[in-house]
Length: 486
View (spheres, rainbow, N blue to C red):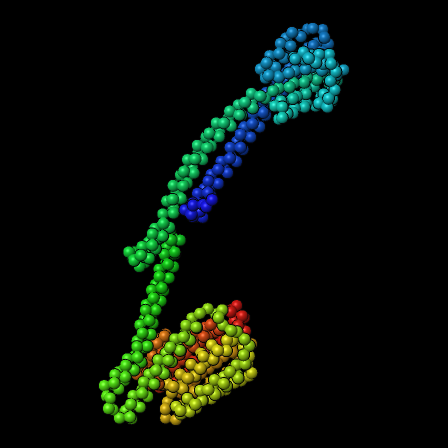
């Protein structure tokens, strides 16, 4: 049988847990307090009853000892027996008198007369001790009191007074009190739990308001901020939520801008291709040289489109989690030599000197493909955005310590204005749009490089002076897992 999801949700809710906690905090102390009070009352009542009976029994023992009752002469016997009968009637008990030969000479129940009784209590009383005990199982107070004449200098004990008193009336009163206590406790607990539930529901109102306002924001009917200032905690939650909301809005704006930029970048080459194709179609008798020129332009636009698509695909791969990295031990010196060897033709065409300087052999745990892509973009940017008078240079430096390897890419290029430095890693951002289009830049190279470096748990910094050059400093852990633990 399937449980109702709403019931399950209620049981998992903070509201239910608070109500349960309130119930426990009310019921457990209430039960403990009630039991404690009743037990204390019971002990106190029994103690009072013991004191009362013991006091009466001592008076009776003194009367017996000062009379000739123990001698059997009969003087004062009727009076003492009347007192014993009255005492047993009042306290619903039994009294026996034992003489020095351990023989019962009087029993208010008349069932033990002239019988011999030898017990531990009787023997102790003959040695002068008063014995008082409570039999909780049978609800009886039992006493053993020595009978001796205080005026007798010898202190001889002539007998023992055995008193047994029932506590049934005490237990009956306690039972009635328990019933009353249960009714009172249940009533008080019910009222306290009801009040606690109302108070908890009142306390939960701000959380409900937060939930409703978030739902309103989600559907577009609420303000784009959360303001519930009832408690310090709700204020902090609202602050964190508003910060997250602002961040999500920035991300959404960035995504929309990115989509717009992608559309524009992909559309521009296609528009150029269409214009060139329409021009060819409108000139059926155009000379061969013109056709070749137009086809060359179309080829260039197709290559540009292809480069944009490839860079976008690379960026999408960089956006995936670091779990997609193929980490392996790679010789960084050899990797840089291969990259510079591939880029040398571009440097020669731009008349830019390409220099590699390494200080020690370095092996690191990296994804060779993704790191190659990042380093290639940094060096290629240094080549492309450099001087064209034959005096340009790109200097690549590799060094390491016990934990990281450091890559520095310096160039003597056009530099980056200070106001543009914080934007250079944004997708499709170009410092000099006209120059970027001339050299075929897509505005994605630095975004790709930064994503790859961050995936390796590294860091990248840029320093630049316009018309003097740019320096990129890269730091990457030698051991991928060690770098991630920091």
